Image 1 (cartoon, rainbow, N blue to C red):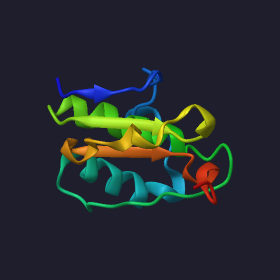
Image 2: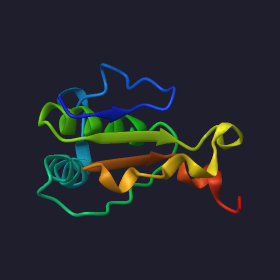
Image 3: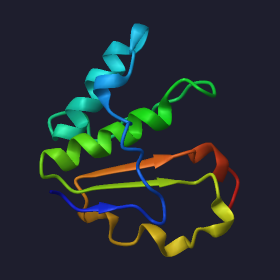
Image 4: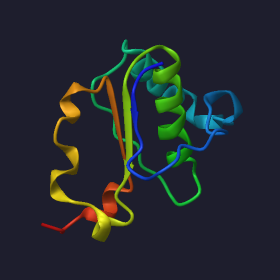
Length: 109
């Protein structure tokens, strides 16, 4: 299985594409699946209101990448006070990088 960097966080085992109700977001779900597979866009930015499933989809992407023997990293910037600036060093080696709650770090040097 591909390497996953969890940084003190656990991916929810239930965060899977198979149990996400996409509704009008089916195109986004398909794009994230392709990105996790390594056949989609290199950069994808997801946004939406609270409770719309962004974290679920990012973690589902990591699970899918790992199931396909691709390395994946996930980090939430929600608790930015606990994160070191050197945190992302070496991440260029991962096949998939998912950064959640990026809005929490806006304006933070």
